[in-house]
Amino acid sequence: MVSAYNLLVNTVARKNNRRGFYIGIDDNNLVIVDDNYLVNCLAEDNGRNGFIIDGGNDNKIINSAVIDSCRDGIEIKERNDNSLINNYVADNGNPVTCGAFSQTYKPWFYAGIDITDGAEENIVINNKTSGNIGCYEEDCDPDPPIERNLLDENVDEDGNCDYANRWKNNRVDGERAEPECVAAF
Image (spheres, rainbow, N blue to C red):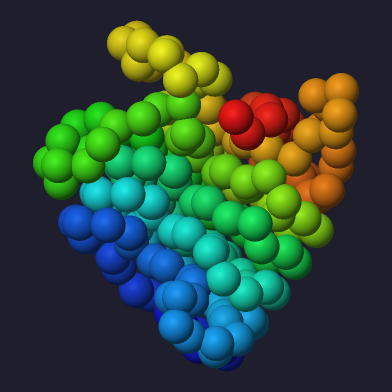
């Protein structure tokens, strides 16, 4: 989506070479991409992210699912005031899916839900995650896989979460969980 005020309901994005759903702008487009809604959508077996918000603010992904993406399940990339509510995010960071699309597999960048450094005042509520693969270091070995389900890259000078985003009632494998707090490198 490269425009504002769109509503996608009951939509499936499956087996795309790159992303399932992309909210963003291209380099030559000055269109504001605020206030988009994705409701009851499914992103499955996509070559990069299932959902990515890479442009605009006040976008919402609600009651949707993302499964078996090569990279992050849902990524909010340096954008503010977006909401992720009641989503199911499982088995992303999948090297098999990456190989099917000839994509580079770099697990240290991946998580089920990833809010990148500089993205603030986003709301992440009541999401369920499981089996998403990622790790902390560039030279990590993804075998065996390391689960990384909830990730917030916004940290203070001491490496602690700076609470720039609001995380509430999210679950990993059925248990309530707070996001991992990792500085981008």
